Length: 372
Length: 64
Image 1 (tube, helix red, strand yellow):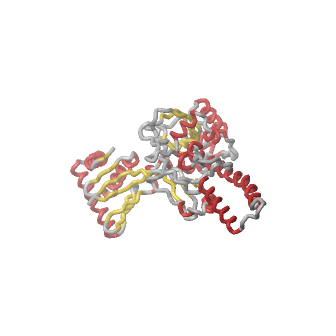
Image 2 (cartoon, helix red, strand yellow):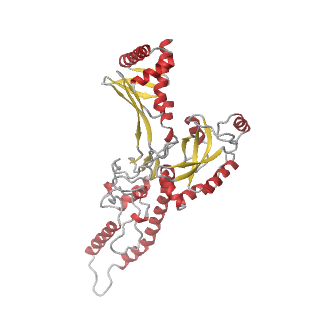
Image 3 (tube, each protein chain N blue to C red):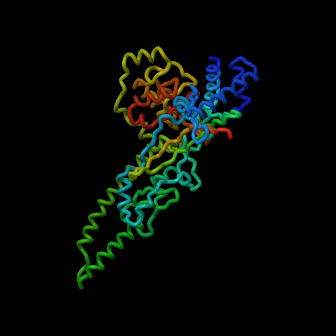
C-alpha cells in the first residue's frame, strides 16, 4: 500500500502525456517551488491537497478540510461521548475522602477499549473491535457495567456494590465497598471516642437510627447510578464496538434491541422540493431507493445479527420515507451481521450534513460507510 | 498555466492515494502517510470523562 516516488512520476507522466524524464522535471520543479515559497513566505497552498507552512525551519503540512474528511470517512460524524458527568465524578470523589485525587485521566496504554468501525468492503481485514488489550479488559470492564467484574466484598454487604469508574488495572478509583466500610468504621470510632457509653444502656442509638435511614437512600442512589451507566454503556457499545455488538446481538442484547425498537419521535417531513429532487437524483436521504450506487456513502443506523429483524427495521425506515437498504457484512472474526443504512451520498460531507436531519437516537448513533 | 496544471495533477495523484490510505513518498520532499488514532477516553478539568472517537489523519514527514 505504498506509492513510491517512481510510481508517482509514472502516473504523472501518464496524466500529462509526457515522458518520464519530463514528468520528473515537473515534479522536481514543483517540489522546489513549494519549499521556496513555504520557507521564504511562510506558507504555500496547494489546491486539492493542503497547505505547507514553515515551522522551526521545517515544513509542516495541513491537509485541506475536504481531503481530511475523505481520508477519515470511516469515522466521520463521530463525536466525543460523555461517559461520566462532572456531577457523578464529584459525587464519587466526595464520598471517597481517602483518595479523592486518584481520579486521573487514563493513559492510552491503560485504556481497555480498542473498538473500531470496520473497513468498508474489507471488513474482515483489520477489525480490532472487541479485542481485549494487554490488561485483558474489555469494553464493559472499563465502564464497570459488567456484573462479572464487580468486586465481591469479603463480608456480606447489604448495600449493592457501588459503580465507580475504574481503570483497566482494576484499581478502585472512586468508592470501594471495603473502603467505605473502613470509613464508616473510622467515623464510628471517632464518634464513640468522645462519648463514652453509659453503663447499662445501648450506645448511640440515635446515630444507629440515622444510619439505618441512610441505607435505603444510598442504595437507591447507587442503583440509579448503575442504571444510568448501564444505559450509557449500551449507547457507546452500539456506536463504537461493532464486533462486540454482533456478539451481543447473538444473545439479543438489550442495547441492540433497545435502540432499534425505539419509535421515531420526530419524523422528518420531506418537502415537495426534496421529494422531487430525490426522484430526479439517485443521491439523497429521502425517497425510494431505485438502484444501489456502488462507491457512494450511506449512514448505517442498525447492525443486527438477525436478518428478519434487519429487514423489519429497513421497512420501518422506508415507511418513514427514507432511502433505506440493508446488506450482510462480514466481520473480522468470521461472524456476519446485517446492516441497515439510510441514504446514498456522493461525498462524506453530504452524509454528514444528512445526519443532522436524522431524529434521535439515530442522530447520535450512526456511522458512515462506503457502499462497495 | 502549465505549472498550475502540473501542480493540480500532482495534488490529485497524491490526494487520491491518500484517500486509499496509501503512503506516498516523494523523493527530495517527504512522505505523506495516513495515521490511525485509536479512540481513547480523557478527563476534562471539570471532571467529565469523554470518549474520543478514533480517526484517520494525514501526516507529512519532511525529508531530512
